[in-house]
Length: 558
Image 1 (spheres, rainbow, N blue to C red):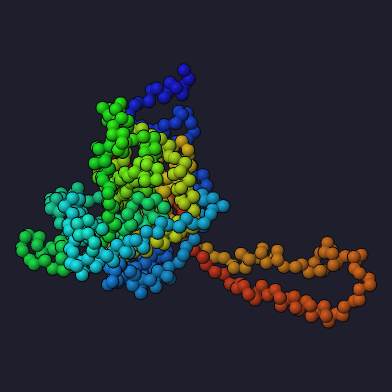
Image 2 (cartoon, rainbow, N blue to C red):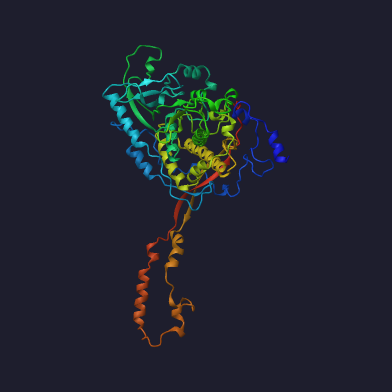
């Protein structure tokens, strides 16, 4: 028996779920004695402290006098969409389109075109217009959802008043909002203020985070998050603070801003689905007879397990990048259906309730907020990421232009909030890019999977702004020099200047014609007149990798 085989026999076997096994693992699962370690980051060539300048002195990211909106903008009365006002759009156009000069992601030189995001907006606009008609014309009011910790409402369309078309979550009725209709949160906020809220999240920003999760899903071409946008709706069913103590006031029409997410049909929660169709090795009493259950209906086999695995890998990477602090088995959905063409069963996942994501720092106080999918069987998670997942995400996350465009779109989205602060948004963006850096480093190693990803050291990728002075002529000197013809008397190696090669039978040209030609040549190449010679200033982004050395939360399982 070799050393590798003996060491593998000494490793503990999974007990109940992956998370219990993961708490006692300190090293990756490949061969012992290897030079790789997931808790250390190869920082050679990535530390740019000498080029780092404090971005607080630069306001191009959007400050009180920068190019970022501080208000809600205007609301389209026809569709209810929230749009930027004239001042906001003008400020956004004045914002510099900064270029990433140095990236810690080490992008490939031969990067292809930027992948186009998923285009689900036309269908979303159609559903929103139909819901607006149902509310204003047919007077089909919203219905409050009893489940959950916030004030959320079902929105219906004109065709079916019993099947919702979307879910609307107002800003002021969020779990920690001022007008949350849930009494449990009121008691929590009133009598237990020390344990109230999540310190790593910005309060009352869940509606923007819902839309940001949809934007990230679209730009990564994942297709798990239903299309979500920030808009405004009017209804008499919204929670009215006047009836806080059951005063009996007549319902009034209120206009509220929040997130509108398309409703997913024929899905069930992962908790309900896995109870009905448990995964292999999930329960020991189902292990031996699981393959023989319900052979005509849905059952787990190699094909369905592969479909579930590929969808789950996308969910894992999405949750990890946006650092979702509330991914339980009740807020990601599963749908199974039989393909009519080949008769095989297909598995689809959907990620909902993404409002408690995009923190401004890593959890470091009371709770660690572990991902809910860590409680799946070890046989599902203790497998390296598939080649399909690597080929899908690596070209996107290694594309510098993709990061530049994503930053602009996310900045415009988060700037819709009236309490937007550029300093907090910069920290949110650093956490997101740090999580994406860990994803890239994990996907580069074909031996790593979800377990190695969650065991990586949390880090931040800070966008530093560096301003330097340059002369425009310096950038074009080489190209102009290569295209410019050399004068005849500049070197004895020029053919025209060698006496032996001069054609003696060719008549000599008068001197005045030579002068005219020299003048004409000088007029044809006026580089000095076209290019300004005065210095100019340019601001670029220099990414800096920073290890997060904060303390571990007190409760690591909650």
